[in-house]
Image (cartoon, rainbow, N blue to C red; front, side, top):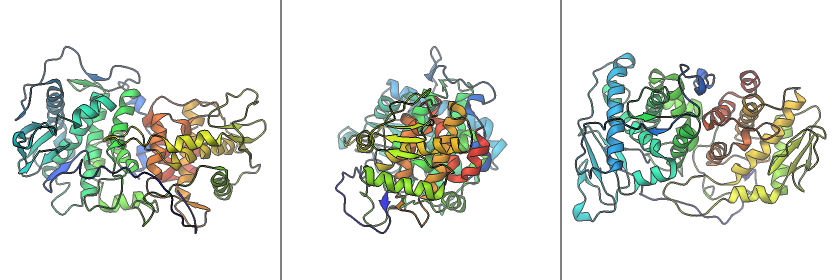
Length: 480
């Protein structure tokens, strides 16, 4: 975030992976407002998805009879080939129901080790795989390849086996685009990537419904981990490259569109649709904004409180206590590091703990678990004001699936207003990603007055996204 009309230089660490997750021109790289999509609950997908059931490879199922060129026959190559076998069977059945043209299965697979010596690195898509930490689809050869040396182990270690399945589902989405008539060589990379994310979401729903031969996916920790991996491979500097893949907010949105609404809606993702969905939201870094972070201090919180009062006025505005969370509040479980006490109409904030939340860890990682930054902290502060708003509107303040998701949605609605002129602070590129990362990791901004949240990060992100795209009125009608 940044103050409006005030420019300053802040010292910060900018984590950039450089070319670690890039591919050649012919390669589509994975580690690279659709109204109905906010109205379904993934807990109720055909009544067969499980919120707490098993997650990952099925036990006792024979491995797929597929092989990969240069493969090592190890567990990660086996997992990848099982995923691709399930993907091929799924799309062979579903393709003609959603697309014109004829379905052709991918003609081959390749595995490589990005840690191997240059002399031992095979070519993929007429490019060396030496130090290529990629999973990719090669258009010319109609093959899919992956790095078993660093990328797949890191995905599995950080996010679990289903993250690998998600990445390969994304690549298979690229394999579908040409034959389905969704894209051609003139289609912008951003559209290609959003479509592939959407098609991956379609397959993930198939897995969640229990219909994948080799894998299962529950809709709590399983789907949460998959979305975490999606966030980790976001564009860290959106708009800077012609090979733009999308911010975390946009990539999660595309996955959720496919998961909720199916393949037919993926066809509607175009440059125009993306621009409409973006609206006035910041999608690229302005000069100097790459490292701009507001200090999480009393002054900044007062500026945000000022904007909250301006854009969401209450008949009885809350008071603020920056000396810590409310200690004595009858019949309410105090939330850290920000609380709202209905009986005194007070928002209490532990400013030092909020600042720690914003700082996070500065460890350089290939696939970071969290996107830290100022808005990861500020959105939690915003959320407690939104609990006060619900009291002002005489709405219930308890219930994770009602008050909690409504809070996330209203916080998203306010977030959108920070992209508009007239406020004390302004949203910067990356702030939305910081918000969605926090919503997925602990969900504090999607909690009710007692800090209760739904276990599904999918639902928390969906509520926030609905607020960003559809505004306050939608929040008040969708979560009752």
